[in-house]
Amino acid sequence: MSAHASAFSGAATPGHHDLPDVSGLVVGVLGGTGPQGKGLGYRLGLAGHQVVIGSRSAERAQAAATELGIRGMRGADNAGAARESDIVIVAVPWEGHGDLLESLRAELVGKIVVDCVNPLGFDKQGAYAIRPQEGSAAQQAALLLPDSRVTAAFHHLSAVLLMDPETERIDTDVMVLGDDREATGIVQALAGRIPGMRGIYAGRLRNAHQVESLVANLISVNRRYKAHAGLRITDV
Amino acid sequence: MSAHASAFSGAATPGHHDLPDVSGLVVGVLGGTGPQGKGLGYRLGLAGHQVVIGSRSAERAQAAATELGIRGMRGADNAGAARESDIVIVAVPWEGHGDLLESLRAELVGKIVVDCVNPLGFDKQGAYAIRPQEGSAAQQAALLLPDSRVTAAFHHLSAVLLMDPETERIDTDVMVLGDDREATGIVQALAGRIPGMRGIYAGRLRNAHQVESLVANLISVNRRYKAHAGLRITDV
Image (cartoon, chains in turn orange, green):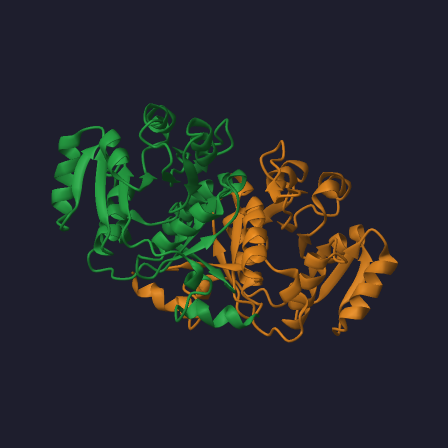
């Protein structure tokens, strides 16, 4: 074990002192009325970020923002949420992923996009991975948004824990992927704003598929152990 | 968080009291002269198992067993290791995986096979996932060995840590996959014999590809953080 092993206890986070201060960034959440997007918006709002909840319907987005009850949170249609934010989390269902991103190409120019979509299918045996033609949801996003800074992160979070006001810390690391080192550093820092989480760089976008589809395994874990499983990376 | 969260500290391992006693099982390691196989053989030998190191060459296998210096460890050619063992770990390079298993079909009838092979490619940007035609190395094994009990596990272990005599505990969980619940329970129990490790059920073989290829991400983690990364599943 390296001297870093002690950091696993949460006492320190090696490398995080090198990460930028992201506390002033406005965060948009596309698909922010779904469980994953709403939960992330809630946690980032609690952490002090201005959050814009996005949805197809501005009214439903505003209703979700109001329901979350965090000062300064607002709702907008997805295009508005993209336009008003510095960093844009994509938390839509896989089915609408490509069409939505293609429609928002102009709004997302120059922005950091954080794809957290898990392409999964479900049948009687549970969840299974779907392999997008482009390799992964994140690679699809990168192809559709050549002028954005596409990263992938926040795949393995339990929406139940994110939304549970009794849960103060979420005991998980966040694997952050991307080909733009400055962008992945910003997303790592953003993950680190949520108590309990660390953002850990975990490779290039070409290795996103297995991170996205590992959710199928965590669903199996949750069923077997009645858990809300997360992942920690040890020795970091 | 469930009441199980405290188990994450390693104080207890929920579900492990339901796992069988595997202490008497003889473990064979195909490809046991490679770093991963040798390291696993070493740890399971230290844990008190009779281990048979397998290799194409019985002489090299015996030399590796002697080098490890654990009483009762022996070497054999891969067919001999398969024949003499109750549970057979497959730790060969992906390139020879299918041919070897096909050649050992008779020796492996009725046995628990634990596939820990990670099909990866490497180029200047590091490691990337290879997707076997059958879906994963483990699914290939299951197709080639219809009369064996094929599981997948031990993908994410650092060979450096496994072989380091100064490292007493290995801080990682072991994801165990398979469609045969009794077999996955036995493999979970086997993983739990190595100090620090827990064997966690993590789904059916059809969800093995992402577990196998996640090693590409852990290689990126190791490069970035100068670590020997492992994975813990939280809330279990």
